Amino acid sequence: MRRFLDFLIAFKEYVALTVFVAASLTMIAVSRTTDVMPLRAFATGLVGAIQSTYAWIPNPISLSRENRELEAKSIELAAEVGRLRRAEVENRELRRLLGIAPRPDWTLVTAEVVGKTTTFQRNMLTINLGASDSMFPGMAVITDAGLVGRIYATSEHFSLVQMLFNTDLRIAAKIARTRVEGIITWEGGPSLMMRDVPKALDVQRGDLVVSSEYSSFFPADVAIGTVDSIAPSPNSLTRHVMVRPSVDFFRVEHVYVIRKDITKEREHLLLEEKGQTEEKAQTDQKGARK
Amino acid sequence: MQYLIYSGLGVLLIIIQVLVGRFLSIAGVSPDFLLIFLVWVTMREGQLVGEIGGFTLGLVLDIVSSSILGAQALSKTAACFSIGYFFNRERVEQNIRNWPFLLLTLLASVINNFLYYFLITRGSAITFGDFAFRYGAVGALYTVFIAIFPLLYWSRKRTY
Image (cartoon, rainbow over all chains, first blue to last red; front, side):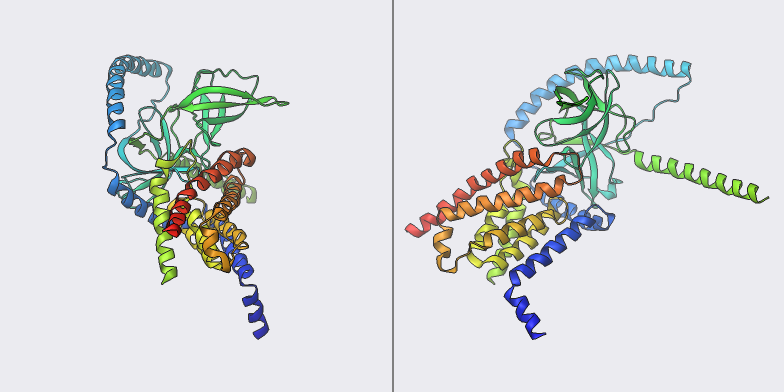
């Protein structure tokens, strides 16, 4: 025992390294499980509380620029509202004639951005709504310009939002003009990337990219960005489409959370379907026994 | 008592890193204040203290920055362990106040960034090479640039 202790003391740096590496690797392995959610919620609340104490400090330069942009935007939006009202009436009428069910409405909840964490390429926003305001992980967050991200963790009064500029986020998306589907990821830099789009499919610079119906978290047809460039992959039948996001993530101050919990609704549907399948299997078994 | 001061300083730097780091970010790359501090601690106190500091403060940074739990802890432990080999009890002050401090900060940043980006890009479609070069190498240089300021401060302290 004495010799073992002497050995540990003699090689204490290596022993400590082994222990710390083993502990870190274990934590990395459990990092994405729900076991660490209480810890995440605590950290979100703590960082949110600190950030909200200085979030009120105005930035005069950005305020004046924002005012000019808002004035221009309000004129543009007023014209668009008129066009959209006419289109909605037409759309409702056409859906009724074709027998298509109306699209579900979203409930938007306004939230204020109290902090931004842009540490080490896992960019996050902290908003001033939390579990006590019925916010849940997975809810989509948007602005008038388009998709911002999704809620990642909540504390009682704050939520952490994973921005599109986050290496962990993958979004089912499509080109609005041609309905070409793909997965949007971020690999650093100012653009998002739609990987491995077949060369034969029609994608052009300037095309609008929107969220797809296949997304589990985001409602369909929310603007993500526009095609900035198309990078050919040599010796391959595919290419990478670079997408410039519609939202300026580093200047966003107010966002809307879509309260409709798409994931839960889909889970419910899947469970229902599973229940029906099990019920059918039981009936079949009984029939076979008879 | 000394270790308590180190812990307090470390936590303060983590708060600064998370809250203020984005204002200093250039094209998405931010300097790593905590790593500069850990290099300083390792050069003063040796490999073991550096490892303990790297692990505990890295873990706190993981929690506060919503990073993958354990990624910063592992990369900072490895960085401090590596530069701990250059600890020289006889030349602590000379090393901290001269170019070895910058050189070791560069070495620690490269080890820290490459290991961290390897861990966070693991299992994803992201190409580690591109990401590590763009953020790892450039981030390491930015951290070294920021480390010049405390070095200048300590050098002036020696003169007067």
